[in-house]
Length: 163
Image (cartoon, rainbow, N blue to C red; front, side):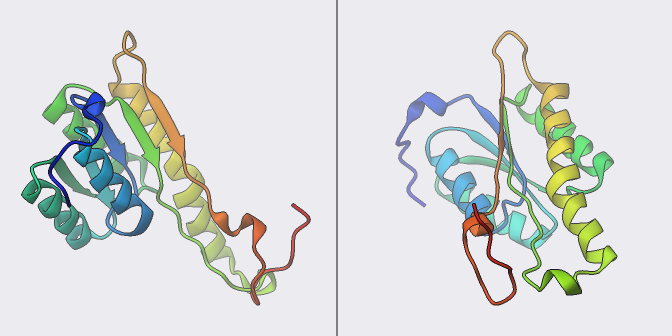
């Protein structure tokens, strides 16, 4: 990770990111930190959270690790409160965490569907509540909800869509 801020306009911003231990969430955390933001790296993967934060700090960025299950409201709100104590507020939340099971619709179990919606839908609500509890109304805040690119793709485990 490059320590040089590529967009110093994000200096002083505090961004709470879910699903940030790998993939797109990790990339967003690293990029936002390079741009001067302080980031909360949240994920169920505690080791992954620590790895991302260690890398960001080694490059001169500011980051904090919060291993949480985004489907559990209390965990999300507690992590947000801890992050707020570090920086005074939360300026943005990126609801990136998602659980997708690419399997035929006919074989999805109730347990799998419940877990997928608990992370993807409930987790986004809890992330939004985290921002609303800790943002500065005079400054405003941002909520970014990520979605899967699979909406327009066909695979052997998905039926084609007309979208």
